[in-house]
Image 1 (spheres, one colour):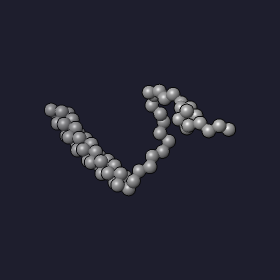
Image 2 (tube, rainbow, N blue to C red):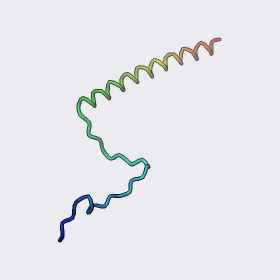
Image 3 (cartoon, rainbow, N blue to C red):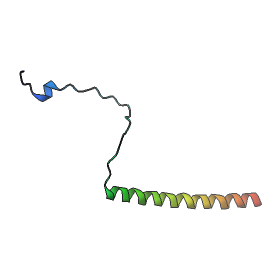
Image 4 (cartoon, one colour):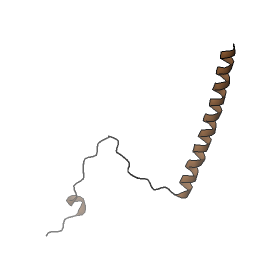
Length: 63
């Protein structure tokens, strides 16, 4: 068999701009720690927002 340069021998699939399904992610411990900190921060903001809204609607219902 005649040896041909790899870039000429390999056929590449045409890639379109569609999104592809992600099957798995490999994350470092530092990345997991950072994600958990962001999630905790988001939860605190959401919890505060819920408290503000419940007080607002309580005031509206009393008025």
